[in-house]
Length: 214
Image 1: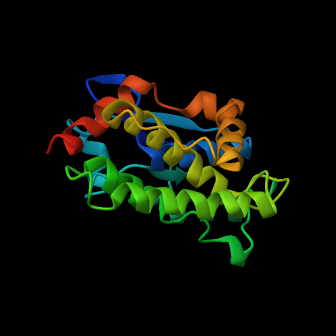
Image 2: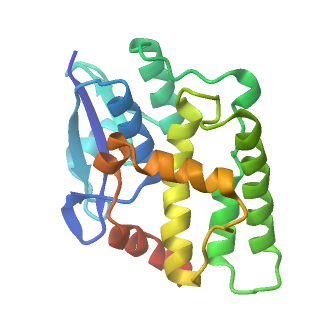
C-alpha cells in the first residue's frame, strides 16, 4: 500500500522541509514504524489546487493510503490510523499517560507571544515543564518507560520548537534544574528519525516570527 503524506514546506523555501510540529509528528510516526512513504512538501502561501480539491481547508499534515484513498487530515487522527494499520512496533499510549505534557505547547506559545514580563506566562510554562520533569523522574526515560510511544512523538517537535523559538526571541533556556526533561530532550533529538524529520532552526525561527511580531 502506497502511503503519501503532505507536510509544510519551509517559509520562503518551498523545496525544504518546513517547521510544522504536527507534520513532524506524523513523519516521526512513519519513521519509527518503518513505513515507506512519499512526502509532498506544501507551500502554504501557494497551495496546489489538487490539495485544495482533496482537502478544501488546505491544512497539513494530510495522509492517504493507496492512490484511490481519500486524503485524511488532523495529526491525532492520522497517528491513530497509523497505529491501527501498522501495529508493529506499537506506539500505543496507556490511557493514564495520554495527557502527560499536553499543556506544554500552549503554555510555550503564550509565553512566546507575551509582551508583558509580569503576566505569569513564563512561570506557567515552567510549572508545566516541572510537572513533566517529575513524571519522567518516576516513569522515564520516555513517557511510558523504556519504550517510545505516541506521546513522545507528539512532544518531541513541540519541545524542539520551544527550545529554538524561546532561545531566539527571548534568550530563554530550559531551566538546568529540570535534569530529567533535559535528558529526555537530548534522547529524542538524537534519534535518527528526529534528525531526518526536523526543520532547520532558521526555518523554525522564520515560522514563528510573524506570530511573535503580531
